[in-house]
Length: 388
Ligand SMILES: [Fe+2]
Image (tube, rainbow, N blue to C red):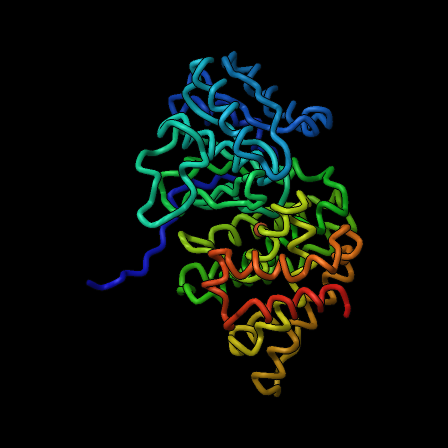
């Protein structure tokens, strides 16, 4: 039996400055009469959610607003919101926000169609999800996670203190990703930086993964190049619409490069540490990217050389290994320019390194990493993050 490689993008992507004004039309065209709009309280207070509700109200659409999404959404939240979805007789989902809102929407979709609790649908072989989720429209308000096109939702299990993956199947895919860069114009620089480096990490990890293949490689390289060109500008000039548009496209393409596969060591580390401390995914990922790249670049030197080129480094006349090193240099400089705080400043005690290294090693995303890793290697990378 041949193990076929495959890649598909089941989600339709629509994008334009002001795209959010078309939300109601898109809801109707999916046949939804009573969607649930999932978002977080912060976006309601900031007036961003109003851009969505204005479209729904103007078109007299009946909808349920659930604004209780939190960062690192836990099992209990997903199960409770699924209960509300059922009780209110909803027939579709809108996930508006960063990865937490969109992942919660996907996970609620799994529970309402497949039953019981989201804890029963952690990715495994055989795949526990057997039914498609209801129609889901994802509207990102950051340019980072790419969840609007990924086949994954990341959910936190507070009992095990881990984040686990749900999906890896088209059955969880959003039907539509509606991308409006204007929704990110007010994003603070710190969040722009962290989410932007998270997107860069998705592209770099998928491009250099053991599961890499040409189609996702193509979109990942485009994303790396765009982030190299535009992230600093989006950070320094938050109201630059072109920079916001390019970053939103890059984050979407970086998310697309996942396919049904996983990322690599950065995400093995950031997801497990995020589950322990409840820290924001973007900042954690961004702080971990350069030390992991320094470790990994000898595992995929040719691809690292291409990454260096995509990030704007001049690699002419260099040996492949020298060009590969420049990818690490470029990513390190970018993270420094964006003032990403080091792990020490996030309150992670260095004494936890052995525990964190073991958790990262046990994470399924270790498997696709381009260079062999054991617990000792993870400890070394963590120590490099603390500057020891
Ligand atoms: Fe990520």
